[in-house]
Image (spheres, rainbow, N blue to C red):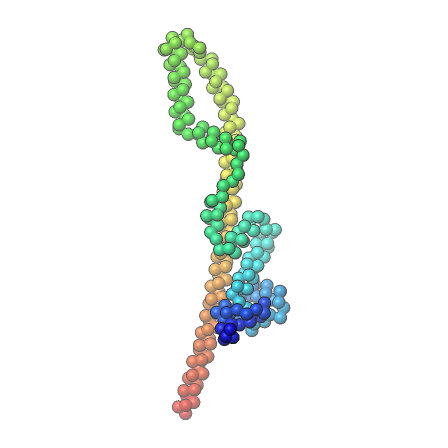
Length: 232
């Protein structure tokens, strides 16, 4: 392998392509401090690879979360993993389907049907049919004549069962709201961390370009000095 196309990292002492070379003086101070904590002999004149720089950026983000939030929960760890794997967290959390018990499924279906116009129309039609059948068809001598005691009993039982069903549906809605809040928190946290990472990359790119411009200016000055010396 041609040595001109590779370099030795001062962090891992491994060989990397020259295109992955990063000078220590172009690395931001917070990340540079992390590197020096692990490698005290690492100096600004040394270099490392892009992959090694990414590892310390991830370590910096984990330390930032630990300081700002405290002990990392499963949510923060999941966000860090998604950031490291460079996957979309929005699609991940939207595709997740929570495990529901049989009672929760029944509560969801009852709440969805009981809070719809379909239920109101069907129930109103049932009451009108019940009254019409007893008054007009059975001439108020049927199984439930006026004042419809059996119908009142049915309505009372329905009202008694309706209260716990409504409470169950409210509990389910609160669980859904908490899950939605957790997902929003994860997405917002990942967005914040990606913005911080983007700032780090932009700062590194600007500093790297400045170093290249300085080197070009030095070469140009040397060339001008050579031309002036030849003219003299």
